[in-house]
Length: 79
Image (cartoon, rainbow, N blue to C red; front, side, top):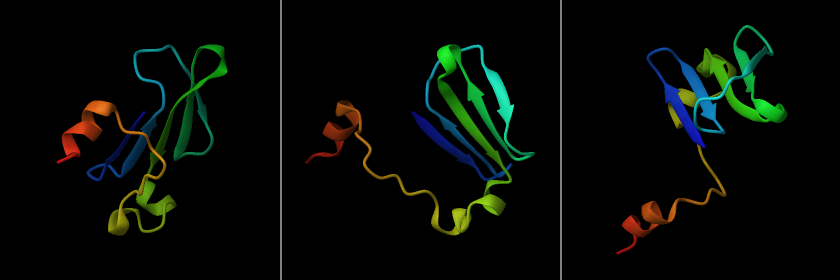
C-alpha cells in the first residue's frame, strides 16, 4: 500500500494494490473516486482538493497507525 499526497495539485492518492490493473473508476463526487479492480477489489482511492475535504491536512499531515513496515525498512531503523 502506498499513500501519497502531492501538495502542488492538492491530491491524495491511496494505492492499496500495486501494479497495473484494469479498473473501473467510480466517482463518488467531483473530488473523490475509487478504482475497482478484478473480482471487485478496491485498488485505489483518489481525493482531489484534498486539503478542502480533510481538515488540517496541510498543517498536520497524515498519521498512519497500526502499519507493519517491511522488515528491511524496520531493520534499517534499529541501532
